[in-house]
Amino acid sequence: MARKDLGARPYLFPQPVLILGTYDEDGTPNAMNAAWGGVVGADEIMIDLSEHKTTDNIVRNKEFTVSMGTAEHLKSCDYVGMVSGKKEPGKVKRAGFTVAKSEKVNAPIINELPVTLECKLEDVIGGSKYLAKIVNVSVDESVLGSDGDVSLDLFHPITYETAHHSYYSLGKKEGDAFHDGAELK
Image: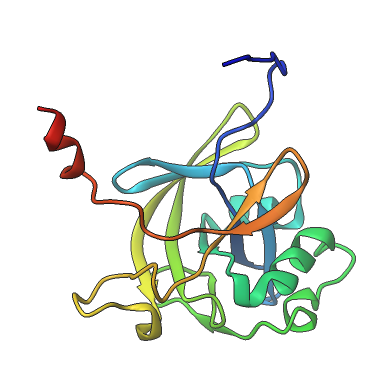
């Protein structure tokens, strides 16, 4: 197999499309699309962010929500990443999103996005890496499988493809973790 060096690039696939929910200082819901983040432990998430209205809100409130963008709401998810809350304070509504206040943290849950992590800020590392504890996962029952947990047959998160700035849907199930490799033992 021939290989080519591309240099240092953020090529980790799949890359989740994270929609962060916060409240502005006047209580207005705000949301932004963030691509550089992921879980860093059983109950922690880290997101690398430059300066935004959302980061101001996170530092002030110490709480926020993280929902995964979905294929069904791709345009709305993209929009909240293109428009600044500093210039368009009503961008959540313009995106077509409705919100409910989280019962666990002082942040909005976007009703249209079925899986939401409710988070409390633990630290800001290096000025841009926001480390948070996940205190709850709120899930719309429409994406729960027969076992009572999130089913990727019902929930359709999108992934961000860094090289060409595109969104993709996740594919079909290919196997069972901690099981299929047993054949090689």
